[in-house]
Image 1: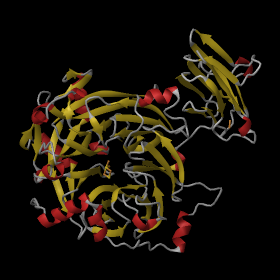
Image 2 (image 1 turned 120 degrees about the vertical axis):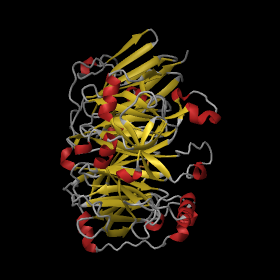
Image 3 (image 1 turned 135 degrees about the vertical axis):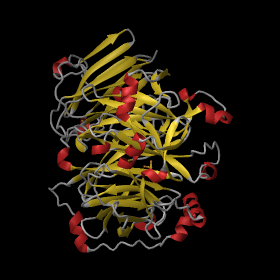
Image 4 (image 1 turned 90 degrees about the vertical axis):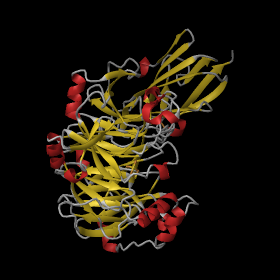
Length: 621
Ligand code: CUK
Ligand code: CUA
């Protein structure tokens, strides 16, 4: 049986120094970009005009709050989809539907995107994401690439990872990065261990209603919960997540949360938790069904792991989970089968907060230490089950065999990769072919844009010996990404007519302005190349209201013609929205400024787009 390998203190010090300061990092890294790519590699990424990429890359936009869509292998940026942040290009966060969904927030921090799955395979229907910044979760529909629902996740602070989904999208699990008192009420930090909790939420998505819901929550100890992954195949009922700060430090975490030699992986059986909830094994807290493990027993276990782990990833065959540590130089391969055996035999070494601890030795299969590889963070897999781990400090991707621990290949990337992402990498059958390193530091890779450089995404051909063959700058900041086969996504060309939508206006003669007290409802049409707000008026393209009126603009784009999108903006009113072909959208606002305000179409839609204007007249009180 393998013994616990203590971490060399020198290594640890070096790692901490490097993570603290990129100034240290810069002196330890070669300043030359080692490209190594050649002309023939160019052909592998060149997608001629008229042809399409083989894959979509959905990259999280980090604190931009958006999702970036790229084509692979060309690495061309195709679209930015706003998720948690306002976006004037699409009117997201301005129109009623998206403004309501955003719940008053204007930004978010999108770390982990996850496709919906059927039988452990991406099904191309939805994309989920979490917001570390303002504790929300979102669901994006892949017919229109727009967000359908956002929920606030109560009792948590910073649902970090774990928009990971189970094999048939039964749940996504959202562990929280920061421990807070339940309900986020005020509690002194001196009572941290007693009063604070790290809450994990089980979120469901109703595909008919397109609504996210919180099924239940688990009040875990006041630690930080980091990355997570759902089981697959034989481990499909289970999920794992990493923890740090099991020291329960409340200040100076950089030092204080790195004291203990080990933290834990939380291993839980969601089928069992589901059953417990169905049987009433929970307390109702702040309107949520909350499982308290010290009271409601079962389904949750702790597995010791090298201190301060970051990523944890389940192998495509569902047999193993691999943890990588920020502060340990090794990747640890754990066996689900061994864990199940230990659970069955109640082979525990103790407990924390009522949660049984499995013995490290009885669950661990091997520790893997590629020579001089430093800062392993996240692991992806190819079609042969080989693992690819990002090395944040030594700036490389290491390919290795989870079954033997043998290092098979390594390639330098520029620089400091957080995650990498493999084609169909989180499914039960990854594609191989491509891996993209999501690098935190681009440094001298591109033309300079000042002191802060873009991040970079490097495309690596993994069909033979690993080779970086393309590099794309990207806005801040992809944490994780997923790559899906392009033919799995079926977008619609126009929004279909919805005769039940009372706010929609499809016939020009039906365009009208209805006053109701001080509420004004405009049922208008946008078409190439004019607005019709009131078909019977002398000037159909003018809206006239009184100062102080509450105005609703319900605008329908009656061009049922792919790609003919119109916009609607009122000068100086800080408003803009978009209506895609066939779509109806609503802007709601108070006409608080009196005056004469031109309104216009913001989206270039025809040769006479410039003429697509009108006036918004506000009579003073
Ligand atoms: S975390 Cu960012 S590099 Cu949010 Cu997945 Cu590891
Ligand atoms: Cu409609 Cu420009």
